[in-house]
Length: 94
Image (tube, rainbow, N blue to C red):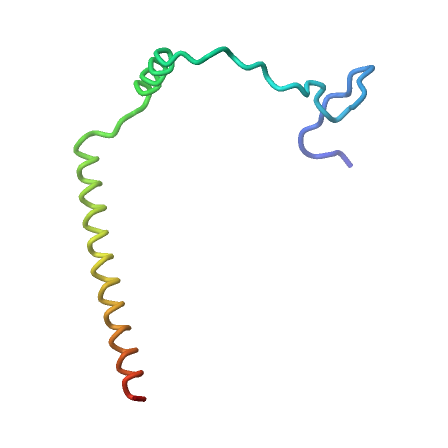
């Protein structure tokens, strides 16, 4: 039966280990980082981003605020109802 999946290439002649990488050293560390080069690269990457239109961002923000307010009102109502019910039940025993 044939093996499924990716197969490894045969080990090189003379290698001590056949299944592991022979490069075990850490990559060489670059010199100091230039802040101006870093910010220049950040700006270049920022230009590649597809930004949403301002109108869509405003509409999404308003929708999030509305849903948050509705959720807050709902949880306040549920919490108040449960608090009333528990106080009523515990108040009967006293």
